[in-house]
Image 1 (cartoon, helix red, strand yellow):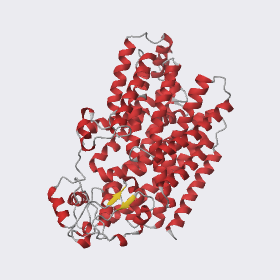
Image 2: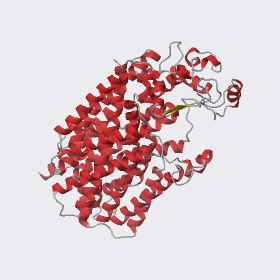
Image 3: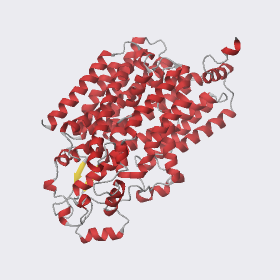
Image 4: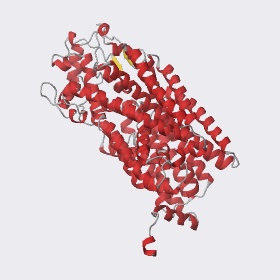
Length: 594
């Protein structure tokens, strides 16, 4: 069957499943719209959380970053998985015991202040829109490839689908839709990985294949290192980031995970406090299946692309021989399909009609001299790293049904998180601003309608941000984690474990952490000011990149919060008792009473 037709069928069936589930689980009340009625089983919630979590950044972009960054990409694996440990131990059970729908509601009640609630909503909107920008770019990438159109057209199509089932079903519909999406995306991710691992190393387990050997007996990673260094790139298994930057990025991603509103809200959907912790454990199990596979997917994708463009990569011949480079007119179909999206581009700089794909900015002068002697005039192929996972089965010439399955999985990953984020935004506007602050007598029906209108507006804004994002999908998502790390995470943590933290300290801490981190990212990512090209790392504060600056922002938040709280009145006695109660398990002390 033709690939395009088969892709339409597979993706269409998955859409029918999601929309059917959304209609079946349609929210009929505000509680069902915000927290799915609070009766979701921990295993089901863990699976939905995993789907919510394994967004376009995890499915599409993380392996792409690992493919191009190699060892340096490991910070995403460590940070995004380690965050669930923090979440399960430090936040989830306590927030569930507090029993509120949203993070701003917790902050507003814990810090006995509508102003604190409004500041939390501002932080949440900054975080969620930054995050959803990455997701909508992922949606655009998947749909542009699936429909073989420009990324803008793909983005608009995806926006319409997100709007339909997020606005219709609310959290109840999204929860059960995400369970179906998890099943689709995990099969779509692991099945191609198994095929490709078998092709390259003969091992069906990608996790073991990464450490296996190619047909010649040479360890796969040694072979990959040899290939990329011969083409002027840095060694795949060696990192270029400083230890302080790796530490800062990892912590920002971990604390950001624990502070992300759309993840935290999932723990309000289970019946009991114990179930919240159980949900976090199940989520980590489901997430680990994909995260342990991603390094192999990234490494093997990088190898396959080079082997496609330069035949000497796999044969061991002369990389600079004219016949080693692929003729543009003989390029495979997958390259032709991706060229239509604008995410893969070729420019014949030396007029030989062949594709020279190498690092023209290499610091290896001997390599550059060889390249010049061979008539190379600069790198001629631009491959967007966000396409690597989707293109991988096509590059490896896998069966059409596998390629179609990956398209369905990519769409499931991007849509599941985009929908969850849009619900968080709508809840913040309708519940935390309108109902709780500005229109306290708003009816339940009116609040539900306001939430749906807010979702619709959020879809439009998210679409624009997805059209013009400040970086690659995973990179943009990392910025959102930095914002969450520097604003909400410290405030929630102090709200649970510090009786002395008051509303003035919390508000000052959130604003200072958010402002510092947001301005740092804006400056160095060139949104308002042109980045300083090669001198950027030298100008980073303490050598910390924008992806990791949220760690410093968290410290700023905590320091400011403690200083301000010490110079202002302590919280009321009932708030201090509330903090003690949140931390005390139900039933504690009952045995002694008898």
